[in-house]
Length: 597
Image 1: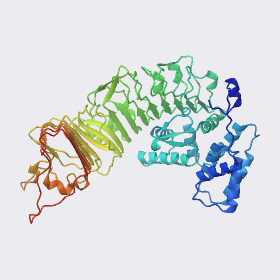
Image 2: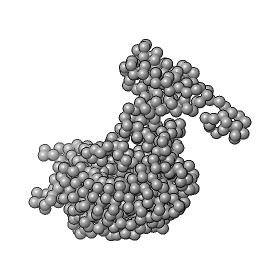
Image 3: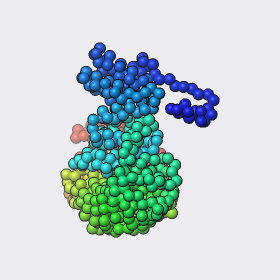
Image 4: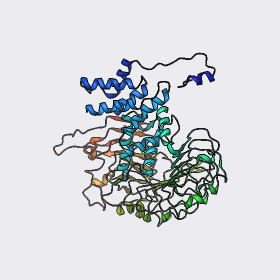
């Protein structure tokens, strides 16, 4: 057991108490300089003030680290002296150690000197103690709340969010975890953040507190702006709860896995609500009063595994983010075409074979569109039920930056490429053309196209036309003899049982080629990895004429291609008859190739 209070030890009848003493002056100074950075030379005058500042931290490691982080990059003598003076003025009696720590930590918060950065810091306090906060999740919230101000693109907003979190890490108010994908607050720093949040009754923060019921009615003051009750054990919100909180803008009930019912009365007097997160709850239907919250900008219902229906969205015209992913809705919610301010939409096809036409063109501000193919049934059973979208309608979304969807066939995909803005560059995309249940995790790149189970004439060549920035192309169960005209970094073939060669040798003949035709001078010129699995008729991967193009190829993987005879067909001679030496990949992995010689 670890505690900051000796009284707690007595209450727990602890017999062997080990007191952790504060750091000595020299230990404190060493820690201060480690955080500040040994490469920064301090003048004798500044060093003396810095040592005095360290002493003001009373040997408390967390305080020392936080203050040292705050002083990184400070050169001026005046600022060092001002910091020392402010720390002296904030001193409390020595017997009130916790208050003293809070004063030191609060100094670092105050000296962020950036209101948005301070709000970002306080937002982290809404998560449970010791919670590993996903950066992506946190930044989405910061964008929702306007803590990250509007930028020219969502990517710019995300970059701004990362920059803010990086700054909080540098001043030791946040800790970086798992390669920078997560952040965490020290429990004392979180306590200080909650103390600030709860000043003047502006917040209720009881995240991860094992609550089974809502806080008492008297805690729901009219001054409230934020309430975080995430990750508790609340099962029901009764009709007796109808808090009058006109200024409440943020309400987190996410992660209450047992929450199955919310009374209609609960949202009746929360007219100022902007962000509502009910993700990961057990609700089967939402009260109609949610859909009367006309100022709501973010409605998050991710992984509500029993949610089968939702009222009309028609009144939620201020909505900017709607997340219905993982919710097994029986049909697309009515009124979605009215959400003209929507910038983020994530959902599944709600059992439909096709996403309704006419909706997407009206969502012209959309930056993120993710239409998932997997639907959860009966709480845990997942089925593959993709809803396809019209290529033309997706292509008309001029502000789109992230896309995940299914197109019915290649013609729809070509429609998308035709109608999208030629200057538009998606930050990430995962596009499936056809159906590909076998490949649930569709590749590792950020720009991936999957071609699956397409109805192609098995005696014909299959021409792939794709955008120039594609990073990975995956072909599964394509019944064509050859495939070509691709420029991905990674290329995977799986179960294409009619395919005999990756590129047709007929393309390199002198006869005129059909339009559109590939130029072999560019084919596979950026390819780094080629994988070929279970292609039973595949005899030859590359013709030798393509060898000069494979300068970036690093790895070839071939498995279960029983008729494979050649990886690279024949030899290539130059005009004088001398053999041309070309770059070959550094790694070749072969398995179960009976015919390979």
